[in-house]
Length: 151
Length: 151
DNA sequence: GTGATAATTGGAATAATTCCAAGTCGCAGT
DNA sequence: ACTGCGACTTGGAATTATTCCAATTATCAC
Image: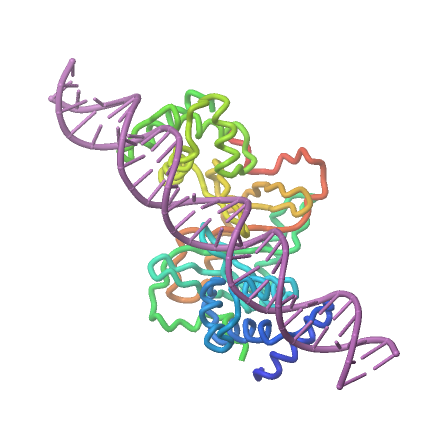
């Protein structure tokens, strides 16, 4: 998917919700797509500033919130600490590597999701499931964990 | 399990880690056991104060942290917002009811855990898995969701 | 009991996020 | 093009959750 296609997708989604496409929203979104390392709002702010030096942190929070509303980005929270943002829309779990602090996306086979829904008692109706592994990723630091690639 | 048995278990665990059993730690722990609604530190503080009026919020944070260290309590974070605390030690998932804001424990069959570990790519070694459902629990407010009962 | 060590306390400090009021931008209708 | 209205952005103040710190207090070993 090219950059302009992503931009198209963004304007489309925004328009669907009656929202406008703005430079700030575009840049925040492309920053998320460019480096998929689950950055915090502060980190996004730092990255966006190199392209849009006058943007404010409040706007970054606003844009991120907007993108989450439009279902273009997922907000992720494991443990205490700042919220992180993830532009991977495929069903996936997160693996939090305790030694590096890094977070990897793990693709979820659909069977696992249906299986998980089966363990819910009567009357529980889940709209979404979040799964976080915690442990160590022993291999090379250049994992190509399934699920990060949208290219 | 009686109250004094819980208290025993607590001192034991604390001793194992070279820590002392104190009134504050005991009360914080019993408060968590008494009402298993995943309270925040502030809520625990409020409940503990009725029994131990001079306790400080800092101490509540300290005690909770200690209990988590001793593996008697789990700290739970879904989405932004304060950390919540859960004295259920059995493997379980959380179901977050979006309409009531309440959180229910869902027992996890061991098969699900082994299945989940199977989806990890080579080199990923998970020590723990956290699962959170989000949706609506349609039934009566008095669910006896499996997993809460230790009695 | 006495001393060493651990735990508690209150308040200040920090971190993350939200709120708010003012200013700016962009489109719709003329 | 011009104007007006609502949406968006901005900076700073406010809020919330949590941690830090220095001083006191309690507890255990001897």
